[in-house]
Image 1: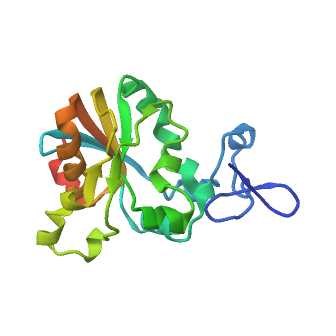
Image 2 (image 1 turned 90 degrees about the vertical axis):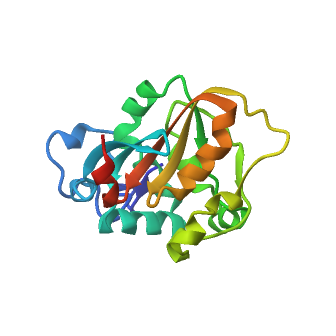
Image 3 (image 1 turned 180 degrees about the vertical axis):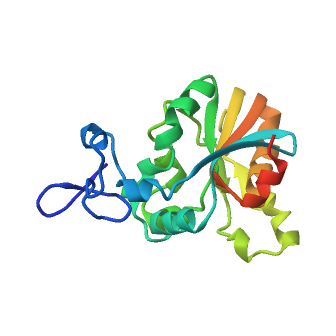
Amino acid sequence: MFKENRRGEPICLWCLRDLYHDATLFSLFDDRLKLCLDCQMKLTYKKIRFILDGVEVVSFFEYDKHISDLLILYKEHCDEALAPLFFDRVKKQINKEYREHTCIPLPSSSQKVAQRGFHHLHRMIDSLNLEVADVLIKTQDVKQAQLSKEARSHIDLVFEIKKDIDCSFKKVVLIDDVCTTGASLKAAAALISPYCKELCAITFAYHPLWKTKAA
């Protein structure tokens, strides 16, 4: 999905300027380009691995103001065209490393999906060549940033496995946009782990505090 100006010329999905306003000679011939070079520089690739309650988590970008702004534009302002940006840079390594896994995205509440008009995680992973199983539901729309530490520890109470769904998997990779406290991933892992032999997780970004736990 690309955006164009009134003249039919491609523009940066993020800043909406001419896609090639700061292009190098090499990028002029890259038909996969979605961001201008200035916006590409805002997404600093810093892959880490860490263990969360026995589950290996791989995350690719350190959460900062730029990523916060991008996620707000995508999730709160419902700019669906931004969806391909998030895993675009790392989709080849994800497809290779997790090709034998079933991908389970963490759920959004039905209210949020209706409000946005799309499921933000499903759209983010559309470009990945992985089998996707939509087996989890979120029964309440809660913002973890507004919860106390004690309340976040009980986030599992708002996740459920869909009824009449076959949850027998060999290998599962959970996917979320950001790992902040890890509460959502832990809740999802607790529900899914009894139904699979191997479980891991991927997030687009991570809170800087997770760097201290990186392998």
